[in-house]
Length: 141
Image (cartoon, rainbow, N blue to C red):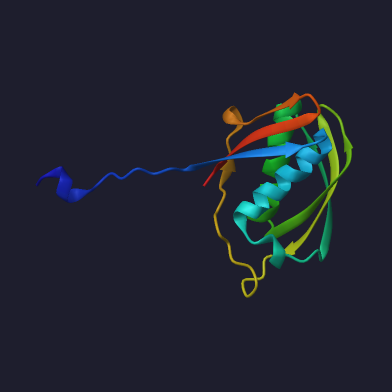
C-alpha cells in the first residue's frame, strides 16, 4: 500500500509569538499576563471574583518573566482560573510579588478560544530600549 494513502502530513504551526510592551518592568509583567489570558478567552466575560497572591522566582529577569507567565498558565490549567487583572506589588531581578484577579471557569459564560499548553523558555526574552520594556513570549498552542 502506498504511504500517501495511509497518512498525510500537513503543516502544523504549534507556536504563537506575542510581543508585549510596558513603560516599566512591572507594567511589562502585568501586560504579559493580560496577553496570555486574552489569547485564551474573551477578557470582557471574566469577573474579578477572586484575588490570589502570587510569588514567583527566577534566576534572572528573562527566567523570571517566563516563570511568571508559566505560573499564570498553571492557575488556568491546574486550578481552572481565568484571570484579567495583574497587580505587581514588588519586583526585583529575581522575584516578583503580585496579586492576580479573576474567577473559576464557568462553561456557560466562558469560551476557550485557544489552548496555550506551555511557554517556550528558550525563545522568550525581554529587553529595555530607552524608556520602553519589550518582551517576546512564545506560547505553545
